Image 1 (cartoon, rainbow, N blue to C red):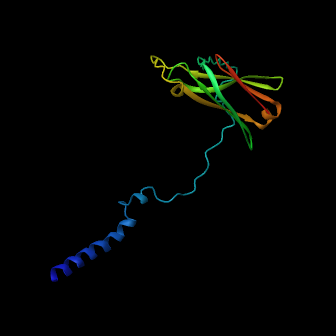
Image 2: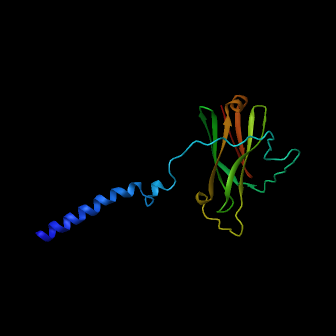
Image 3: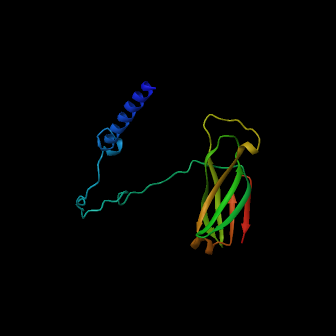
Length: 162
């Protein structure tokens, strides 16, 4: 009994000393200290653009059209609309799918369904395993000019109307 009392007292005294750790440098929360005010960095009058003036960049899209478009859905949002399409690729492993806008002509928004082909991978598999999905976001100004949406693939196209 005395041994338990002495052990308990020693433990309590040890734990009360731990309260001092909150203010010590051993506490990770105190490593950086409190923040203080500092003057702002001097502003330079020269604003350098991220892309130099006069630079012409040509982007070459190496993605190919998917084999066929299986579904096309246009969902309205508060800021415009989202065009979602599912398509079947020639083989498994296609990635980086995107609905690429071709243009708007006579109120028809035409989108190409493109995806990047895998390198060194030629497993065909079932149509379900080759299905990929992509989306295109239309702003409200674009929605007002569009009467129908056409998504093109290599062998077919799907159209939806308002």
